[in-house]
Image 1 (cartoon, rainbow, N blue to C red):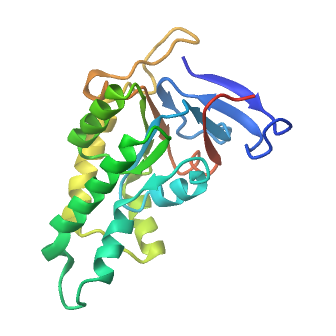
Image 2: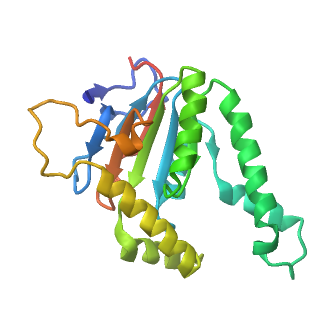
Length: 228
């Protein structure tokens, strides 16, 4: 089950102080202003950060990036845009950009270091692909899902000045809704201290941590490996 510890900095000053959660199963931190400051994962875990465009995935990954390298498809898109003529629409070379993204992800997956993966969460086949690779290498796949709602995500897009096309946003929203509906509800009864199991549609994940706009700002860091 998930456990919470106090993490100090005396032995390992690079690790942030505060309450630390080792997530297992489904961990719902939505609405929690007292959310743990640190999420702790195994040394070679792959953590997928999912959510709607504008939900804060990039911000969260940037906050955690000292702990593990990150794979973000936007970085590949910008690299592709830099070598393409301005008049050429992105849709023309999107397949090439996605191919490069997955090639980079595959290279990263072959290493045994921890990894953060930026993903919309609406593509179950990608989680299954990641799960196959992690199982083959005796690693664990974990998911952090930002559930902020469509209005908050659209406001996030406005704040950053980048908009997902309505058709793409709607497709991502349907995928996130399916994922959320597959998870046990907050009112589902479990014995005190019992782990809330990951349901079959997302059984490839060792844990799913649910964050919203309240709790996401309190989870300041992720760490990988044993804690002092």
